[in-house]
Structures are given as C-alpha cells and as structure tokens.
Length: 348
Image (cartoon, rainbow, N blue to C red):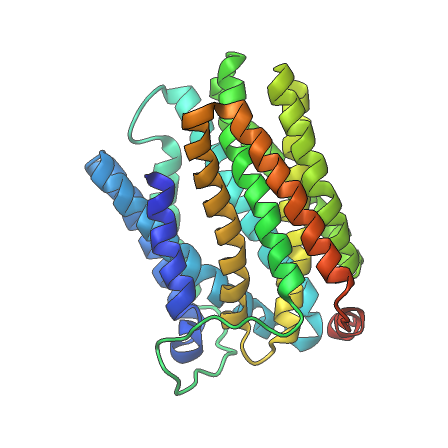
C-alpha cells in the first residue's frame, strides 16, 4: 500500500508535468518538492495511520518527480554545457545518498528512542526543509522559462532505449533487494540494523559513481548489465542458504550496478541527447526506472504470497536474467554513436 501510494504520486508527475520547470523555472519545483516532503512527514507525526501514510507517500512521490526532473536540468545549466557528465554525477551522488541516508537516519533514531512516531530524524527534517527552501530561492537564476504548456510529456531521446531499459532492469533488482534484506536481517535477529545495512548497500553504488564517470557511457552500461544478475544471484544464494554474508554481498553488487554504473551512464546519456529538453528527458528516464522498480516487485509480492518468498525470488531471478540477455542482445545489434557524443559532452 505504501509503495503503491508513492508510485501513484510519482508516475503521473513524471508522465504529465515532468517538464513543468521549463515553464515556471527550475527553482520553484525544487521548493515545492521540499515542502511536499515536509508536509507528508508532518502528517505521519500529527495523525499516524494508514491514511496519513498514503498521503505522505503520495506527497513524496510527487516531490521526487518534481525534484529529479528540474534538478537534473538545473544542475547542467549551472555547470554549463561542456560539463554534462559531471552535472549528472552530482545528481546521481546526491540522490543516491538521499535514498540511503533517510533509512540510516531513521534507523539510528529508532534504535536510540525505541518505537515512536516522532524519531529524531523527523525533527531534523522539519528544521532542514524551511532552511533549504529559503536557500533555494537564493540559487542563481540561469534558466530561461519558456511560454510552453504546463502539461509536458516525457521525452525519450533517440538511441537511449538501452539506457532506459538498463535502469528498469537494475532498479527492479534493487527493489527486490530492499524487500529481501530486511527479511533476512529479521531472520538472523538483526532487524534493528536494517536502516544501516540498506544505507551501506546503496553507499556502494555511490562509491562506484566516480569510476563510472571515468568510463564511457556504453562501457559503464555494459558493466552494469553484468553486475545486476551477478549481484542478484548472490542475493538469491544467500537467501536460499540463510547466509547473511552472501545476502549483503549480493545487495552491495546490485547497488553498484543500480546506483553506480547504470544510473550515471543512463542519466548523462539522456541529458546529452536532449539538450533542449533535459527536464522532460529526465522524466522519461525515471519512467523507465520506476516501471522497473515497481511492477516486478509488486508481481513478486503476489507470487510470494502464493508460492513463498524463495520461489518468488527464483521466478524473478529467471525473468531478470532473460530480460538482461534480451536487452543486451538487442543493444549490441543497434548502431549507436554514443561514444562520440559522450566524449564531446564532457571535455575539461
């Protein structure tokens, strides 16, 4: 229910107003995203329950859609055209740390406070949101809002489908990782370590991003394609054998692909190939990513209820391997000038 509410807020935002910042400027969507995140979290504190949880997750979904699309275009405009890949690195690094940092902060707070609806991490968020919103108004205005429709559909630049598919495949594995790791930790009596473990797994992806930047986008993409099924195989083996070490190794390797090599290669490639529509191209990329993140995980949840968690993981792993093989095979048969474009877009 919680994840469905997040997707219900995110996907319409990406699909219909992902290019909103082209019309109203880059800063307002970022500020709106901050406010939505704060209001959603406040609802959980004031009136904890299913209704407030759904509302909070929906607000976070909308905010994520607004911030990622506007932020990607804005960072490139601040850093100028010849630093597209460096701008993408900053976006992937900050979002990756954000994905894991929230889990870490709340996990630490709950371990210190016990069960509560108002962990210390929420208090820090309530202080940070207004400060960051005010600071956002002081950011340089280097964009040029256009007289375009408020309804801005995603853009899927030519020859970027392998990168979008890679994001979908990688984030589907990440979704399963986030679902499986807490179960395994609970099984070993380590439930209180969930936030820290998820953060560390995602942090591995963050650490891989500087290396991914040094590689060409096709090379980073190919490495991501290799690491996704490899990491998931370790995760599956760990779950089958109840080896927490293998589970953690699998989570780390999958994260290296999802948040490291595939993420940076895909975001920079979409940005390079759509210089006039970067916000909408970012929306297109995240449509791929969150379709991959949501549909397989939801389907695996249904299978788990019917056949069991391990059986669902085996079915998912088979589908993941087959999908990866098909995408790589089709990608290798598709002519591309990605190397030339990437080299020209990130000259020092």
